[in-house]
Length: 76
Image (tube, rainbow, N blue to C red; front, side, top):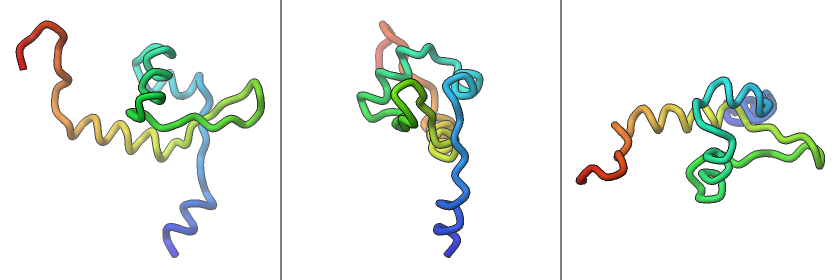
């Protein structure tokens, strides 16, 4: 029941809102989407895309819990 009510109240955010939340460039976000590492965009029209705020927030929480990111050139 709770899951159904959450589906009805989805909040969608624009690219501008996404970039304000995520300090990555557009190309990096696009590459992460293609690799399955970031929530997929939703095409509302041929010129407007949005993201599900809940999915983006879950991605942020997952990043927080995964520890520091590996640095290029540094041993594992």
